Amino acid sequence: MAVTTVDAVVGKSEAPSKPMKYFPYELDSEGKSKSVRPWTFTQPHMMAFHLSWFSFFVSFLATFAPAALLPIIRDDLSLTKSELGNAGVAAVCGAIAARLFMGAFVDTVGPRYGTAATMLLTAPAVFCMSLVTDFSTFAVARFFIGCSLCMFVCCQFWCGTMFNVRIVGTANAISAGWGNMGGGACHFIMPLIYQGIRNTGVPGFQAWRWAFFVPGGIYILNALSTLLLGIDHPSGKDYRDLKKDGTLKTKGALWPVLKCGLGNYRSWILALTYGYSFGVELTIDNIIVEYLFDQFGLNLTVAGALGAIFGLMNLFSRASGGMISDLVAKRFGMRGRLWALWIIQTLGGVFCIVLGKVNHNLSATIVVMIIFSIFCQQACGLHFGVTPFISRRAYGVVSGLVGAGGNAGAAITQAIWFAGKAKWQLDLSKADGMVYMGIQTIALTLPLFFVYFPMWGSMLRGPREGAQEEDYYMREWSAEEVAEGLHHGSMKFAMESKSQRGYRKATEEQPAQQH
Image 1 (spheres, one colour):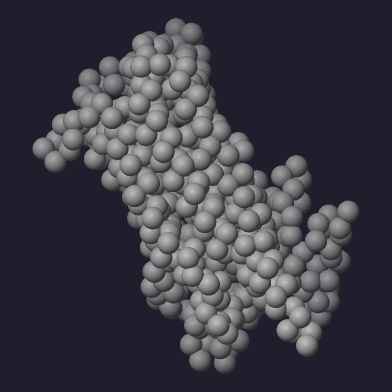
Image 2 (spheres, rainbow, N blue to C red):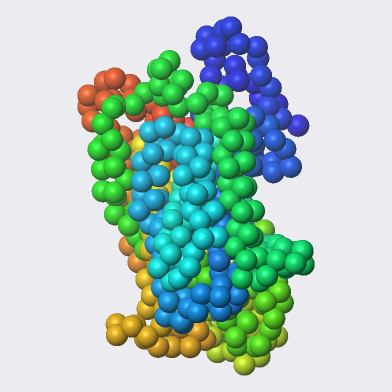
């Protein structure tokens, strides 16, 4: 078993008064873990991992809890097809701006406070779901609950801070995948809670309202546990302490960070394509129970249990996407990551089309839905095998932008294909909507061919001769900031990122370096 001490990484002179701390895994030059061990709760790496994925899980649970009870809520509030579709759009729209804001927020104050603030600020909206009386109040409540999906940015930023670049795709994918399971778990958890409350003698029109006190209470408990147990940084300190002692040097203005993240065209391409992996997943989470309930005449509990399968596949599917990304990168570098992402997301689009075509056969629908979910969710994991390398200085902003792209894709897709009979909308069946959504996915995954890193190349083009990782990441810092030593973290990251050249490139350069 590999054992690493804090002193071995940061040097004894930086913390002479503190006892030596041992870790049951190896650390890199930045103090990040070189392995992911989900069965442990070691501080700070694995505890941050568990707090981040569970926070994302409960945000998913609450956001799609109304979708899990939609047939009941629909009848109680007398909602039309168009109103249901537009409420679903509202649920995913809330997180678009929230994710962008959260990206800058975690870059400034850290993921621990970002997680707790999100839970505490959106918990009232979850409780207020019990008070809705019509479409307007229902849509507003779903909008504000959906803002909690910005938890994804905290999750990915926190894991990106704690795990080495060689396994960051795997760590991000496992944590986000387990978080995404909340979108599936709610489809059988919420009907069970509803049924349990009804069994005590509470009428159905009240029982579904009382059910929302469960996720609302979990929000508050989770926020408190994050504040008590969470640690922002591998050094064992939070962002405020790091800034006070100078370990984490920053320049006061937020604009340079925003400029690095929003000014990088790669961020926008990944945001677009993520809209048709994670965005498609959100759309299915919103419609699947109602689709099975109406299309095949199932009762709510059975429809919820079958619909839950789609989200619960995240137990391994998104994680396997991150693992695939890290695996192909060992031999083919960043170019391998991009090729794997394009292939798998395109296959997801193909099976989305097939899912819409087998709409008269329940068995075929479930089988195809499972295959489709695997490719769709693997593509989500593959995206965050690439995202951490776009910018080191603005990692939070880039994560927020890509994450917001997922919600924007869901909102646009659902508004076009599944929202009903407004003049500008197409009145399609949900099966036809799935077909068109699959076609859209295939087409809007093609921009990945334009992602190019000078030191690693693109899907069709090799790296520029002489380009170095240090040059790429140094461009994010001004001469004045370099003089102040603010760029040191980026340079450490650049050295670790040389692994993205791939095995062949590394073996070609090794003889030259020896010579």
